Image (cartoon, rainbow, N blue to C red; front, side, top):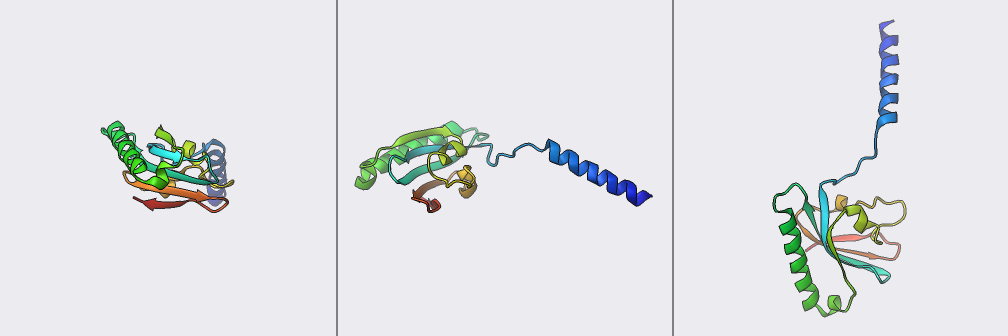
Length: 133
């Protein structure tokens, strides 16, 4: 009888968890800063993942944007591209600008390390590549 009660309780608890579980958003405390070029078949992002809980969060973003702007201006191949500034965008917002394929998670921060600059590239249907800078 005791086993039957435990089994029934387990089933009920599982049902409650399944019915009340909300959508989890990985990296909820992260924002991306930098630049993206998405007006071509090959997408490029120069991105830095900052943590919103850091006291220097806004300063980190501003410094990352400044450094990346210098890199774009001093590299002819990059300077020839049309760039859009990314200032404290969510990881999903950037991912949905063409950096993920249908069915993939738009949270590109899952593939990045916080406080590190990345060059993210995506060509056609291939998955994006992430290179630390």
